[in-house]
Amino acid sequence: MSRLIVLVLLVVLAVWLIRRALRASTRGRDAQAKPPGEIGELVRCARCGVHLPRAEAHLAGGLLYCGEEHARLGGGER
Ligand SMILES: [Zn+2]
Picture 1 (cartoon, rainbow, N blue to C red):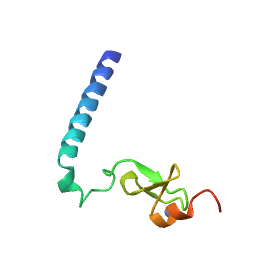
Picture 2 (spheres, protein in one colour):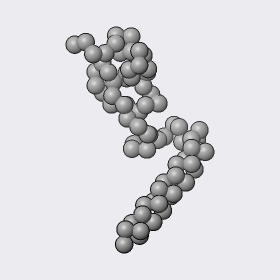
Picture 3 (cartoon, rainbow, N blue to C red):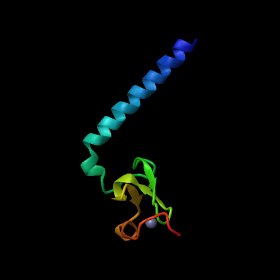
């Protein structure tokens, strides 16, 4: 019985990986209109706490920010 569950999980994982690979190959075209929830990992601005896609986050001092402004101001304080 548990072997069946493992099999189903493997199939789901395989389908997910294939869909991800297909999406990556057409990423250039889809970059303009990404549906919400398909944009990948969300990160939190260390300054104001807003959530945004990792691709749009600014990295400064090992922390992620929502924009250059907050990256310059830094996080944690306040
Ligand atoms: Zn911010």
